[in-house]
Amino acid sequence: MVISAQISVYPLRQEHLSPAIDAVKEALEARGLQPEIGAMSTIVTGEAKDVFVALHEAFDRAASTGHVVMTVTVSNACPI
Image 1 (cartoon, rainbow, N blue to C red):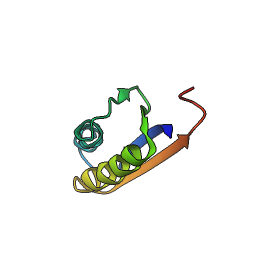
Image 2 (cartoon, rainbow, N blue to C red; image 1 turned 60 degrees about the vertical axis):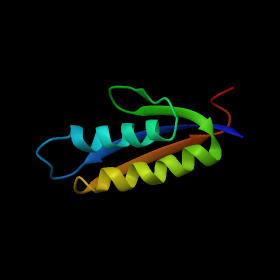
Image 3 (cartoon, one colour; image 1 turned 120 degrees about the vertical axis):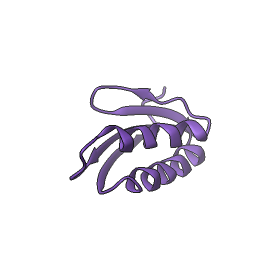
Image 4 (cartoon, rainbow, N blue to C red; image 1 turned 90 degrees about the vertical axis):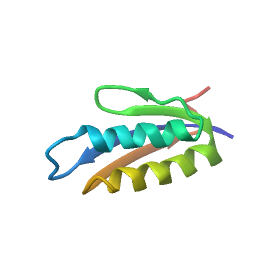
């Protein structure tokens, strides 16, 4: 099943925001996904299994930079 996910990452108490955001982008790309980076969120579309594994890895990588909040909205209707 193909799904889309809208992802927002909020680094907390960090001097620089980009390391956490870059970590998410790199994790998605490492799984062969093509994230569309926006000003407030990132959209990614792919097979559900691939997207969910990538989201797990993305959170782990972002969290390795410090405290973060990651919000994700997933849909099986938006890619159509």
